[in-house]
Amino acid sequence: MKKIAILIGGWHYPRGFYNQLSKLNCPEGFEFETFVVSHRDVDLPIVHQEKLEALSKIDKNTEDGKMDYELYSEKLTKEDLISQGFQVIDAENKYGDYYFITQWLDKCDYNDYEYVCFLHDDTYLLNEHHEVLLLFCKKNFLMNLVISKLS
Image (cartoon, rainbow, N blue to C red; front, side, top):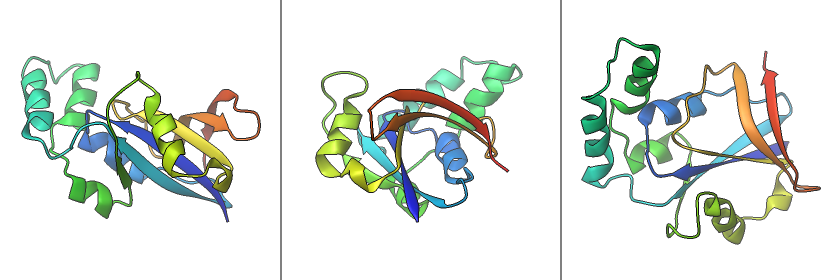
């Protein structure tokens, strides 16, 4: 079976995002392997505390507020990530926003995958029937935005 790697730059750790991603429909003939390149320990108390402080200032009756509450109101743990099938790679936070891709490449072989998708964990997915991911094509290293409805 062909594989798609999904790389997530982990910093914010919104439970809602990881729940959404774990329910994402995979295209027929493919399987997902999901990786969290963790730039800070998800189990640090500050990770959830800072989200609760931010949520206390947000109107949860607005569309944006509803999304923020869906993403951040519940605490996520490393055990949760592993139980949902995410492979966690602890890595130093250095060299800019997308360095997590290089850190993944240091540990994994992109040739094992048809596609390598990457995104940050402060993302809201509309629903599990739509895939909106940046694809990193292994053959020519071009980034393409792919929006496709999965049935």
